[in-house]
Amino acid sequence: MKSRELILALLDWSPTPFSRSSFTPGHITCTGLVLASDGDRLLLVHHRRLKRWLLPGGHVEPEDLEIWDAARREVIEETNARLLPDPAPRLAGMDVHGIPSNGREPYHLHHDLLFAFRAASREIRVSPESRDVAWCTPAEFDRYALPDNIRRAYRRIFNEQPRRSPA
Image (tube, rainbow, N blue to C red; front, side, top):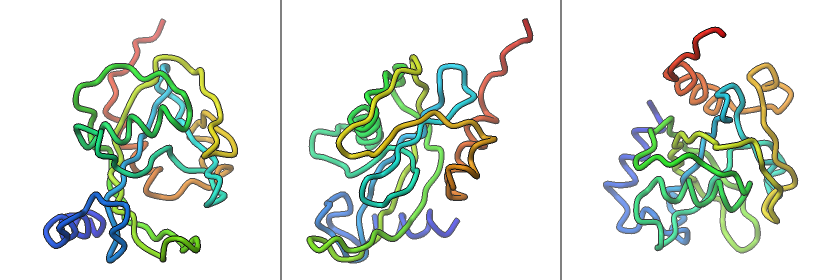
């Protein structure tokens, strides 16, 4: 609930909440929570700068017509995943987290919106922004040291999926 309140406050307070050059208190970013075509795996990237496994995502750009288009674009750029069409992906979660200074940008907050997508296939590839990409099962969440907000968002979306009938 805290992240939701912080994001709503940013939208109320900041004249430029989507600008990546707005550092006080930060800006909106978008992330893709991508389930594999079988629905049992989650797409991860090993972030080059942060040196940890995360969901693909990033900054909102002027060409993103809808807020979820930023998440979709970032997923494709970072993983080359093919996503099933979805005109309005579900908001799977929200998370506000700190981003360390990198010399060009000061420490600031990313007010992150997580949108749910489904992959059309398991084909993925590493981009220059990532060290690696992987499909991760829930049993591997500890191995990849996934933060709690990703685990909660995965459970939320996974539990809402239509169930496959036994063969």
